[in-house]
Length: 317
Length: 317
Image 1 (cartoon, rainbow over the protein chains, first blue to last red):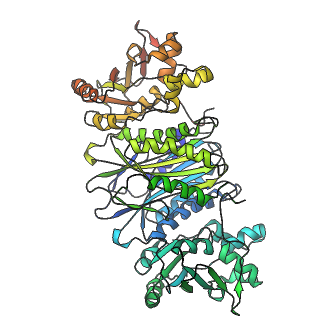
Image 2 (image 1 turned 90 degrees about the horizontal axis):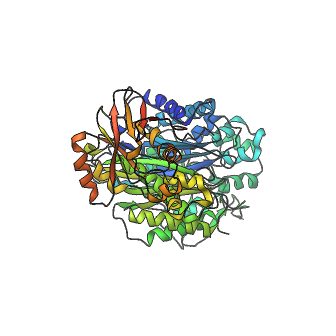
Image 3 (image 1 turned 90 degrees about the vertical axis):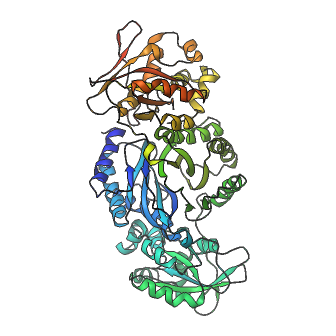
């Protein structure tokens, strides 16, 4: 059994074993971290918290939890077109379990390293398991992409595929590994976000569900038409949910996809797809921004599909 | 009963009613906040979490909790000699209680406003009450004051007074209002930190207790002698604890003081006190850095005093 300071020393030793970041003047172990930002760049900062048995199950492997806690935050930076720089980690742990912490760090630090992110500070307290991550990234201030900037007739694009994580949640133990992995180890679309920032009018990451997050791209009074046949669908999802309506519900309202959703002027769609092809990631056209305020989902037969629910609200259930 | 988005809208409306911060390009309501840092300044960033019934009692007034959550973090910026700029707030709430949130914001935003701090983003989740604050401040990179930089024969100085918050914790309902206020509404020494950064060799804020935090100022192998008679003591504390040893225990190991503790070259002590006098805040000389590794507390009679415990560890009890 360790104490708080042992745990911090453990984290610090692992971070300092990695390559130094010359922009970090003071890292883990002081009252605050001190960094030199790159001249001319804007800071892009986000914070997100994972609560046990709400955002993940307590019996999940700790390295998956470490990956997920960081991925959810990186996805927010990606949605702004930002690059990742520094992280702060605020851990509330029920006990000082070194093995759990080490595994958590395995997942967290591996993704951090791949993402060009340095852990510079944080905090450990005891209490019900709660994992807070704050990221500071940077972006060219002229290139930041916001929500709420969609215009009529822009096309609606989405990266990757939709519905896998929601399917894994619904199938629980019966979920095939590839779906489960999308739930526990989503891949934040950081590089894609940087590339898409050059062509997107408006962008968001899908965490609450396609319909709920699309709503955030639309200024008041605008709506959208989505073609359900165009939704990008993994082979595993198609196999697990052969019934169209069940699958569509997962794809439009399931959430936890961590894909990027964006609106793009119609004449820029091809350029956008080509730019992304270099990253070996698909971005597909799933619909259009309209002047009507509703978001309408159309089946392949041209019928209107009503989803069972809109999306995820933390206090809804 | 509100949902998550109603609560965020509530916070946003209050923040936007305040004067705009022209350095904030994107504030509350997008995937991330975007700010323009001041050229040439270093970022100073810290995060801290308050856990219900650990760092505060669930039955405390929510405005006190809001003040405390921010004050604990501001105190960390003060200890680096930084000024406060932007805050992120990560709230995990058991239910969407608007009245509680409004009162929490009363305390949080009042202190933020007085501190030149703008709330730019955050996150709300449901779960056991957990309040995470991340601050981004700025400092002249040549003026940042660190821990662990004390040298032999430097004087040890502390601002304000010690032991009041610990006394309030011990006395519980019987604590007089002035002590209780020090526990629930500590005043972070931001302006003092900026001023003291010009003369301090090493600095920290006292959250875990004088002895524990002094240890962080001392490089390996160095120690200190503290004069208990010199510890700054409020009239209320002296009245509540007339027995010297009980009072000293609260002052050296109680914690939650949020005063600044620093080491200063002996010939700079007077200048340091004069600089601080303009803020109507005392800073007093309580001892000396030594070449022996122990921290020794001396009574007015010259005896060595052994404290009951060293300080606060989150996993100790």
